[in-house]
Every structure is written in structure tokens, then in C-alpha cells.
Image 1 (cartoon, helix red, strand yellow):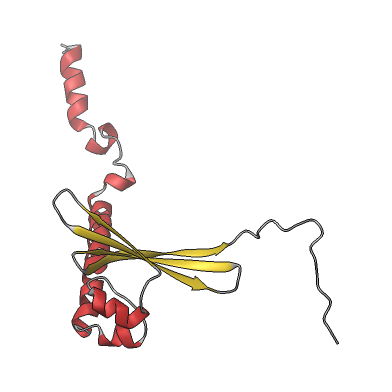
Image 2: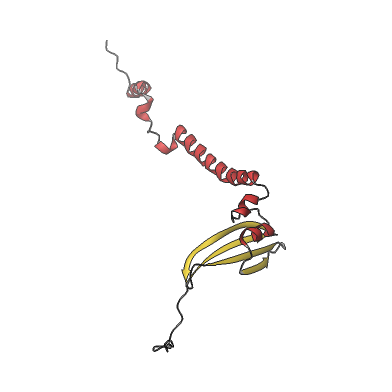
Length: 156
């Protein structure tokens, strides 16, 4: 006598023998555990270096004496230390926040020639340097000159 298995039991039997890799989709590269761990470790290391590196420089020179001697400024310096390193600025803009915190913007001008000037900007909060930036070469536009300027001849 011949035994015929119903269709449902046959399908169940086949699905139990199928390899799990045949049914699952492959995991995308970026979602693999090792790849994610490497990415997170790299990002963590980057953030750690960005935070720790300036602190190490400050720990090596707590009074900023080396920086002042080399005419460099660093976040955390007082206004007096910046004055020792760079001298006085050409312009100081002062503002106050809603909380009453005094903020100052110091603008330094570096003239390379009569037409080319570079600017350095430093920002202070309550007397401590919190940041700054450098603006590259900006040329002054020449003044409008008359069409036929008078050029005196040198006397002999």
C-alpha cells in the first residue's frame, strides 16, 4: 500500500531541512557588528583626541609662557597674556549677553603692503579667550583717480 503525504506536511518537511542562509537576506556591510564596532571606536578616538589634545598642551604650559614667547595665542589665555603675545588690537567690540556675560571681539590688522591687509579675530568671554579665526588676504580697492593726474616733474 502506498502512503501519500498531504501537501502541507511535505512543505513543512522541506522548510525544516532548508539551510537558514537560504532563507535569510545577507546583512549589509555597514550593519555588520564588527564594522559598526570599528566605526564607533574610530569616532570615539577622534572625539577623545579633539578634547584631550588641547588639554595636554595646556598641561605642558599652564602659564602659557612658551606660547607667549613664540607669539602664539591659545584658548584659555587671559586678555593680559594675549596682550603680551600679540600686543594690542586695532579694534575692540564689546557686547553683553542676556545673562550679563561680557563678550569682546578683538580685531588685529596685519598689513602686508599698502594694499593688502589680513585680519585676525579673537573672542573673549569674561576676560578669557574662547576662540578666534583668521581672515586671509583682502586687497583694498584703489581709490578712484582722476583721468589725467598731475605728475610733478622732479627738480634738478
